[in-house]
Structure formats: structure tokens, C-alpha cells
Image 1 (tube, one colour):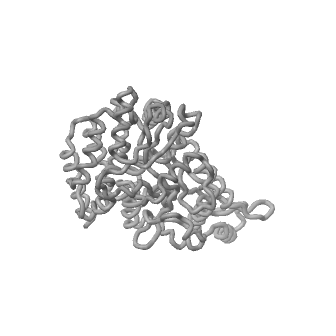
Image 2: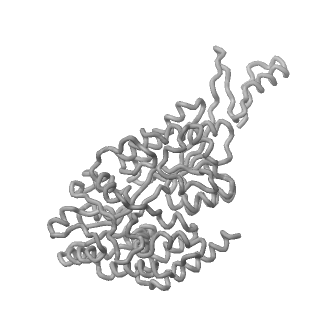
Image 3: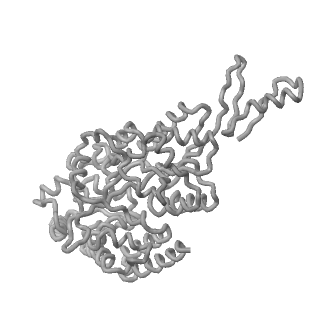
Length: 443
């Protein structure tokens, strides 16, 4: 952005021209000379897109805001323009349109895997490799694979996560139920709770992505991570045995009454409330939810919170796995002027530090994406880490497939849970979508 200096006195056209030229810099911002002769930097703006708009995300939003203020203090003239957008809208609508038009925000929340790969191909994502080298951060992250394409890093993970079963220790103890290690033991536990009038698990499907969490673990338990890895290449299909069996197991849990009957009517936060209020024995959820469940102000069963990795299934090829990855992060526009590059570099330098990694762990229970000297002593975090010991992680399916396939699966899974689609019809429809998107990708 180029601005002219305010004309102090129209003494001569030549003098005015010289003053104007001296007031500009190559980064697009200009400076004003104060009466004392010192140069005061002109303000320039950098857009910042986040998805922390829900009540449950207030602490994370505040953390982002604190980091932005710190960066602004370090970069003269910088002013961030912050925008909050719904996570689904950002990922499935806004970013797709902005990338197609070549005008994404300067800093924005980005999903790893397929999203990062596709956007990197458009040349709209900033290659962070040289910046990481310069700042000495190259080896500080636990895993950058989901933000790496063609040997270059195009995004940085904010935190990691695990998905598994949170459970109410008191309900388990009062009913003589041990933490199940096998799927057969898990079914017996569910039947015990149901027989005593206790809803075994909370489930919400008003937001369709929630419905796909447990099936993701079920079909990977059966067939291993390779069944998901091969979807885009065509080496595996949604109609393969692992997917059929995994979704059939999920439907069996529904038909047996092991979930609340009003699942499709409940929003994600309402589902969490059911478990936090002690109304169900378990809930399959992401590690991020531990902050709510372990907070006495939000959970009646905080003192009885436990976590276990989903039980093994007989003959399962993915029994040694746990759903976890580092797919939520920040991306940066490749179209930056010099001042904007300074702001982006300073943001990375400030935000991706032990200070903010420990803060999000303490305040929200988000797993660090960076290698830290300490992870604190929060009991539920220790329990989750123990549950993942010796386990290999696998990323959520939606980081490995095209966005359109994800949307088609979400609409289909709601019809499936509502009894309007069979397992075969659901998976056949999703496979058609997968094949269509694979052809587009191949072009």
C-alpha cells in the first residue's frame, strides 16, 4: 500500500516529490516524519482468520488474541484484522473459494493432509521451509507430515489430538464394570449399563462430522490404516470389507440401544453435556474435549473422568493403532509484501513456542505439536498419554480424502443413522463420489 506524505508547505513541486519518495518503503507502508524529526511508522494491516467462535473456544480465541498483540508490539505499524468463521464454513466454503480466486487471508487456520496438498498445488500457500530453517524450528515439531507436500512445508500444526473413549469411573465402579480391552468385553459393558437403565454412550448427529468419528476407528481397527490411505489411489474402496464391517458394527451399536435415541437432534456441544452431566457412562470424543469434561465448572463428573483407547477387535489389522494426528494448524498466503512477510515470520516466532504450547495444554488439554521439556501434570492428560503408549497414530479419514467426498459421506451418514440408508447404499454412494473426485484429481 503506497501513501503520499501530507504536504507541509507547497514550496516547490520538486521538494514535495522528494519528500513523498522518501516516505515510502518497499513493503508497502509509509512513514510520517514527526515534528522532532523521528520517523513514525505508518500502520499496515494483515488479515487473520480463525474458527474459534463457539463458547467452548473462548480460551483458545483469547490465546490467539494475546499472541497477535505480542506480534503487533514487535512489528512497528502492524495491525491485525481478525475474523472469526465457523470451522465447517471456513474449510468447505470460504477457503475453497478464496484459493480458487487466489486471495486467501494472510494467516488462516488450515487443515493438513488433502487440503494442504491441494492448496499447495495452486501456489497460494507460502513455503515455510526457509522460515523454519531461519528461526531454528525445523526439528522442533513432533510431526509435520500432514503439512508437507513435495518436500516443502506449507503449514504448521497448532496442536495434536487423540480420539478415544472418555468414561465415568464412578458409573463403571458402581456397576462392577472394568475398562474393556476387547470388543466383546465392550459390548458386555454396554449391555450391563443398558440393563440398569443407564445410557451406555452419548452420540450427537446434528453436526454430521461427529457421527463419523467412531466408524473411522472401527473400520481402521478391522482393516488397518492402509484401507484409508488407498482411497485416492483406488487401491481401496469404500465398499471393501473393512468399511462394510466397521459401519455394520456402528449400526449394531445403534440398533441395540447403546446410544441416546435423540442422536440426530443433538448438536455436538449438547452431546458433550449429556456425558458431562453424568447421564451416560461413556462418550467417544477427541482429546480436546477433556478440558470441558475435567472442568468442575462445566462437568458434574470431572473428578471421575477417565479415558481408554477403543478396544481391539478379533483379527483386526489396526488393533495397535490409536486415532491421532497433527492436522489442525495455520497456513499463510504466498502473496505477501515485505511488511506482511515480517508479520508472518514474527507470528511464527512468537506463537510456535513452549509458552503457548504449554498454555493450550494447561487451559484446554490440547496435545502439544512441538517437542517440549515438560507437559505438566494434569491427571487426564497423563491417562490419555498412557492409553497411547506403544500405539501408532493414524490421522482422521477426512485429512486423506477430498472435501467433496467428506461432505457426501456426512450427508449419507445422517441418513444411515436415521435408518433411511443401508450400509451397502451408504458406502456405494460414497464410493461413487470418491471415484468422481479421484478422476478430477488425476487431471
